[in-house]
Amino acid sequence: MRRPRIVIVGAGFAGYRTARTLARATGGRADITLLNPTDYFLYLPLLPQVAAGILEPRRVTVSLSGTLREVRPVLGEAEHVDLDARTVHYTNPEGDEGTLGYDRLVLAAGSVNKLLPIPGVAEHAHGFRGLPEALYLRDHLTRQVELAASGMNADECTARCTFVVVGAGYTGTEVAAQGQLFTDALVRAHPMRRGIRPRWLLLDLASRVLPELDERLSRTADRVLRERGVDVRMGTSVKEATRDGVLLTDGEFVDTRTLAWCVGVRPDPLAESLGLPLERGRLLVEPTLQVPGRPEVFACGDAAAVPDLERPGEYTPMTAQHAWRQGKVAGQNVAASLMEGGGAAGLRPYRHKDLGFVVDLGGVQAAANPLGVHLSGPAAGAVARGYHLAAMPGNRVRVAADWLLDAVLPRQDVQLGLVRSWSVPLDTASPELARVPGDHRDEPAASGPGAATDEDVNAGNGTDGTDDKNPYDKNADDRNEGNDVKDVNDVKDADKANDGSGEHHPSPEDDSQSITSPTPEVGRHSGGGSGSRTGQSSPEEGSRSIDSPTPEVGRHSSGPAAARNDETTGNEPDPGPAERGDARDAKGDR
Image 1: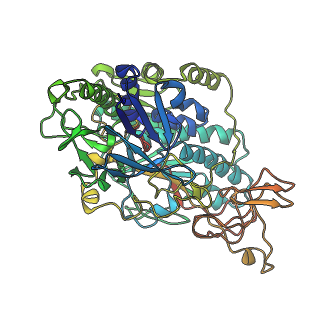
Image 2 (image 1 turned 90 degrees about the vertical axis):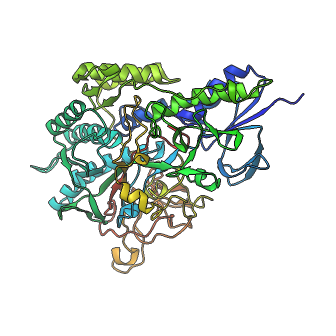
Image 3 (image 1 turned 45 degrees about the vertical axis):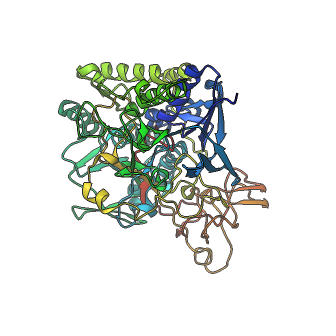
């Protein structure tokens, strides 16, 4: 007798928990396949610590094959689901297509960056929903401080040391808090110009930081940020982003090379492609997580609009805590539906009770509300880290070891240059994957600029812009977390930069590959994905070359980003103000 086939799309908080629960419940009596773009589960709540140099990248990744022994992981992105034929069509990382048949399907595709029709944001900002974006931000912050320290122009130094974060929800608040400590540490290692120090701005249209949480916790976070030197501006956001800075809604123009977009998230476009009833982009499901009319299909996490039985008439917010809990219920219900005589009567509805929340503010500071008990300072910090260690499905010892080392040793202020600006665009349906030249995913993403609907814009602080990063989901609807930190790198025309000589002066910003090169550490001009670059390269655009005396620096390459201009050879082109976003949930619910 053939064993039932179960396909799970997405390995975020919901998908991973579903797979783990099913593996235990079925005891090897079912074929369980987990389709995900990466071979790991990403623990998003600790991503800001990766960007701040506290944790090494692999610490927040948990191997799928290593922890889900009874589950078959398949690398790929779901492109289309044929509900009638019961097949999932996907594309693997190398562009090859495949098909998976199923008897039960669990959709846990997660969410992507929420984009609003604000001029320049898609071009000059970066999100914060995946590991590539965290690695890029870490390098970018380090590079800006180093370039400012070596520069001769005071205005340029000030611009490079100004960092703008949009969205004062969980992600934006943590990015600003951790980032301020990180750049302050970098400054202490460099002879900055007198009177110049890193300046962080946290913007949000809401009236207070963490608007979705208890006011006492909001006051704690606001106090810590202001004492640390963060310029917290509530009721203010970005009106326009350019290569030189951002124009705020209050009319002020801020010179900056960094814009982090942490305004929120919205459901993965896969949900909309199914042609099923939706609630603001999320699949409508029964309390049992089944899709109405399709008893063999379940949905959970950010991709599903799950009725909130504790608040009749509402849906559970898009948070990591809900995704994790829904994953368990989905796994149990799928297993129950496969039992002989299994039917709707054997399925349990999803219910929840708020456990509270934690917000890590860096150092020993945090704000927490476990089980309704308000905590701040070191006590809250201990609770936050204790919770994360308990909640992580792996790597606990390694994470604890990194925390210990960070407490006694200085952080390494080096940039690896592995992730370039153009490879982590804000406009992407796959924030967990970095783009590469010639990538089959270089075509416009389904979640690109202008994809936000009038409902999204008018909703402003609506629930579909939630931040999944908070491990405790006390109304963790991150209304203002859609801002991605994005670094805009503009490269000037080579002829102009070199007095019309036509000679290219590569710098570590360009990402191209060259075998015959005297400077392999600098990228050459080479055909990339879409679009092309000309002129001087900069450290933001990594490239690789074998035949080069400087293999550590990338050469000029024509990457999938628009051409940029910079007049200083070897310096990073004037980036636009954008850089990371609120991403708790990557393409499989966080």
